[in-house]
Image (cartoon, rainbow, N blue to C red):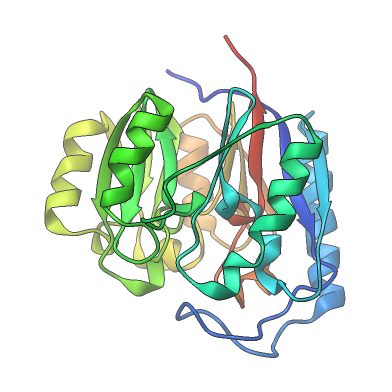
Length: 271
C-alpha cells in the first residue's frame, strides 16, 4: 500500500485575535467564538503535531485579520518557494502582507500569480504528481493555467457546487498517491467522473462525515489528524491501516475552518 509523504515542518498562526466578524461562507457565526477555548484547542493541535515529530513554526496574528489563523489558505509552499494566494474577498486580502513578510524573513523564495485570477491554498491539494484545484467559490478556472506553468505540474480543476464546501479541502482528502476520500454532492457531475478516473482508490464520505470536517484532516505518512467526533470515518481510516489522532477544533468551525485549514505544510520528507 502507498504512503503519503511524511511532513517535517508546518506553519500555524496563533489565534490571539481569532473571531468571526463578517460572513463570507455559510458556516460563519459572528461573535460566537470562545477565544480562550479556541486557544486551548489550538495548543492541543500544536502538541499533537509535535508528538508526530513535526516542527511547528508559528506566525503571530494581528487584530484586524481574524481569519489569519487559517494558514493553509495563504498559498502553496513547495521546494523552498512560497506561491502566495490571491484572495477573492477583501477581508482576507489584508492577511497577505503578514504572511509575505514571514516567508521572506524565513528564507522562502516568494512567487505570485498575475493577481488577475483568484486562488486560495485551501483549494489546492496535491495528489501524487498532480495538483487538484477546487473552482467555483474561491479559485477561478483561469488560475489553473497559471498554477500549472508556475509549478510545472499537471493541474486538474474540480468544480465545486455546494457553498458549504467552498474550498477543496472541505470535501476532498488525498491519503496517499493512490487513495482519497471525497464527498460527491460537493462536486459537479463531470468533476465526480474526473475524480473516478484519476484516483485509483476513491472512497465516499457520508453527509455526516463531510459536515463533520472529515475531509479537512491533516495527513503525514500513515498518521492522520482528524476532527474529533467522527467515529465512522475513524473506522474507515483504521481499516486502511492509518493511525488516527483526534483533536477537537470546533471553535474554528464557527468560521468555517478545520484542522487542515490551520496548517500550512512547509517541508516534507523527500524519498
